[in-house]
Image (cartoon, rainbow, N blue to C red; front, top):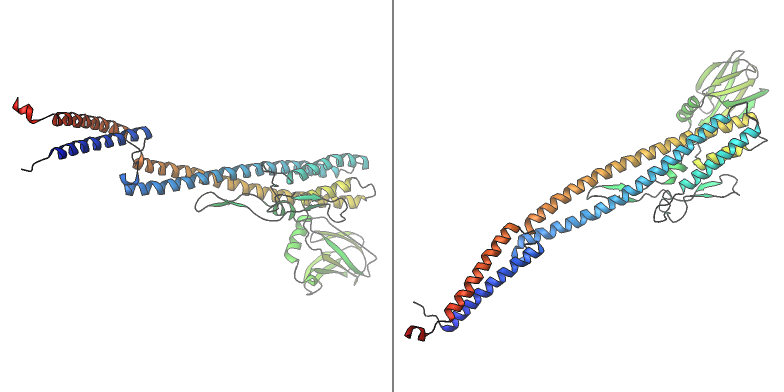
Length: 409
């Protein structure tokens, strides 16, 4: 049997009490903080998992913030595009209305007042700013207006001043979404009305043309226009008999069409209405003009100018209406495409946000299992530790109270 000295007796008793007090303190801290991992040494593997899960949760929180910013931006853009579309719908109605032959110049100027107001409204909308004062449709040049107005310009008073920069926001580890639409793509790069012009005549005494069937002419233009070799865009009409005219390509000589013809009477070739006075062997040449881009504000401004031009002929005004209608229709198609794109991005962002919430809940649950205290278990353990401490204290007082004289008595 090992003999225990008085010092050992005291040391062991004090150590037992101290250890029980430490365990009791840990339990009290767990209950007060709700965490069972008070230090990494409590569970090194679990502590490492908690760190990784916390980092992942912090990242998910940032993704949610990004997603909120993205959706707010896209929803604002969607509202603006809808407002512009409504304004253009009204302008289109006025354009058709102005084609009423019963209207005189005063009536057209009255219509022009509203068209001018619509132009100014659209100009303001395409220069919309977000809550940070950035111009939504200016691309990377977001500190300056997307579109500018220069009344001294002889070509285009309303011009795009931004760029085609696209900002993207990351909303998950694998998904990055476009946060803005460039005004260059939506409003500036809109195809204007395709046209042609008579370039030369030989023997004909009178030659005039106008595009009477725009859709057919557009197809012909798109199928035959050669951007690389301009010579291929020239066509020749030759009167081959008293009642026929043949259309050929000047460069290749290939026959495009053979049509019925009566001198002085209009005939239509590929959507172009020609009126020609001539005889067999006479020719006239016409050219497919290059496609042009015209922004929607300039289209409205050009029509506003035509409505207020008292010197403009009836035929010239009809051409202005045709130009404006095609420009507005193409602009509305571009805006519709942009709106569809914005809506699609909002749907994707919403779906990603919901997935992020699900992942966040799963990670929080996994972290909770590792680090959160089980209150029922902790309270039971606390009662057990209190009993153990009380027993240690009671035993210590009993043992240290013994002496040899107690046995002698």
